[in-house]
Length: 337
Image (cartoon, rainbow, N blue to C red; front, top):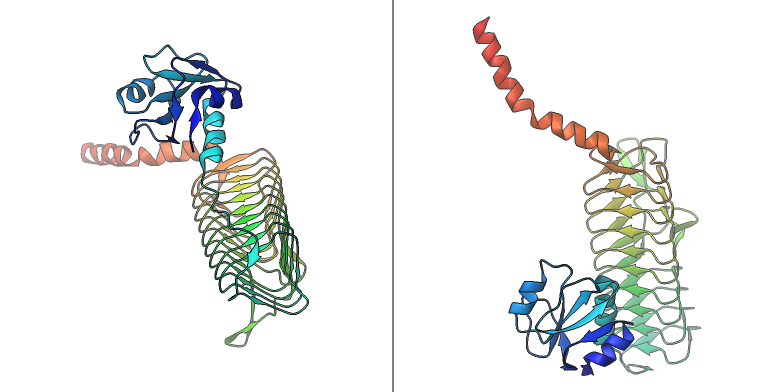
């Protein structure tokens, strides 16, 4: 793709300063090339961008002048994200069904649907308009996938799952595997049948190799516009609200309820004590490596294990860091005594 800086400035509702060059791509500052447009997030980054090979720089309205062409915008981060969407290769395939795809009986396919090579769709599947099912995808019986959704290769969607419109499901995701349900039967563990499903809202994105288990009964639910990173585990009967963010290597234990706009940072988890199911309130934040074992109030920021209010957790860490010094002082006192 080739765009002039003036075209990009207009699109971003910004202002061009300098020569109206043609941009051939976007780049990081470190890997810039002639014709590239880069982003300097602050004044500290600007000298690096100026010293590099990029032809032009996206900056804030307040950034100083430069010898290179500048595109000034109100919010450089958001502007560059918009540019990334513009320059991103779509990877779109034309509508149609590959000859090697297997389509079950009573399947319903919307307009301009794309079904890739060796994809398997079970009986009673319903695929919305302009959805893309890429090669080697397995879609079980009675699954519903909404319009304009994209299912990447090697995704498995088990029976009765529901996926909303404009969903993006990345490679290796498993949706609707059995929940981990067992009951002690003497010295053995007897399996509890898992007969529920998974229900995913609109505009949800799910990262590679994430697993979302079906409910024992009812539904495991993911709310609208929620974004889930790679390598996340969501267990049976979990309910996640709208606009949540769940970062990689996190795990949400069975029957946890999560409100809207909750942030779960990397390697965090929520686990239910025996006989109780954890509830995480709206707008709560679980800092990285938090271990939640009790309810989190709306708007709270928690960290540590077991998770507690973030300020308290920081104080605990400060006290722990003082232990070696306290040990030395105690030994010195013992020698005196």
